[in-house]
Length: 110
Image 1 (tube, rainbow, N blue to C red):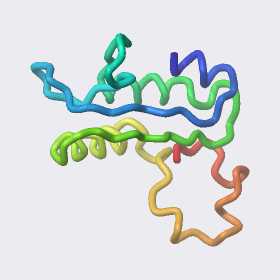
Image 2 (cartoon, rainbow, N blue to C red):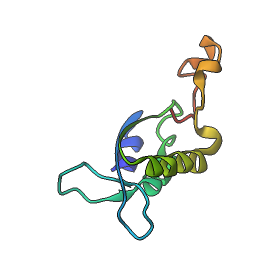
Image 3 (cartoon, rainbow, N blue to C red):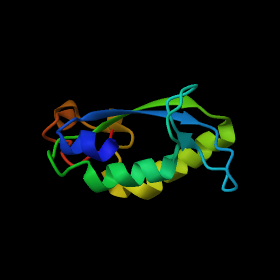
């Protein structure tokens, strides 16, 4: 679903994050309390990384709805940094205002 959405030009995707109960104990993505299938948080990020800038170079905003415990949130932060690396916009408040335009943020994950 994420690849289809991003390939269609969408620039914002929502990720509903929950504590994982798998043997890997990784956070999972699914629409809570529904019959949707689950995907590990890391795999969702990998799919987003692969397709985020195919249709458009403009920044992609991730809207994270976090229902995870603190240890699982730590795992999420690790995966965000590990998967997106330099594409992850970190600490944008230290940038001059003119550098926060969509043009200046091309190729970035927000």
